[in-house]
Image (cartoon, rainbow, N blue to C red):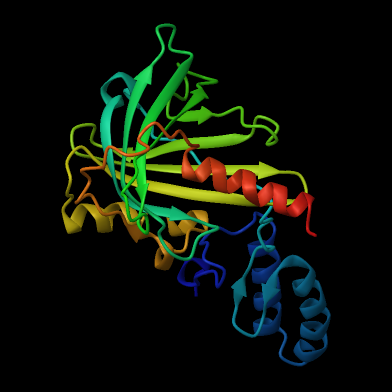
Length: 264
């Protein structure tokens, strides 16, 4: 029997370098020592529990993930950021703090600074329950810490997140679709995750959406709460169109932090 045939019950197929060695030494000993097997199995079961091994099922598991820290993410390799800039429409949206979608008609345009050190997103959106369909404007600027090595990883200096507000381009074909993921973290506060599926046009094929969604669960994103973003009836009224707000994911992360700081 091979360890590759067992799936991790916590969702990962990776095993530590130590646990398979302990697991197989126990299995081989029991098979070759039938008389003393029960005694030594009892001893090794204790070792197994410390090493993350379930001998009853033969499955190794990893310690529970730290939900205060951002997951380990690697941005898109060989990312051509100059081809990525320009206008996009958000087709699906996820935020870890939201159980229902509050926005519609979210659109963005990305600009790269002349020195390639920063990328800025200008965006607009409306609230789904707004009777006057007011358009909200805003922008966000990210630093590109390693433009040559990792241009698909951006960092936003959003107080009070100690400069740790990471955005990653996970996938794109540049001309039609893209997948972005964001994570903010702050000491002693839950991390905040959000994600965009974006399109150059108002609609995106179901097969493409499915392909992009499948990339997200590994980062602890619950697809049940990845909501379609309406891109219709976006002709906003002329009333109060000078309003200016934060990108929803940034505002939500800030609000979560403030709630943890002031629980009462």
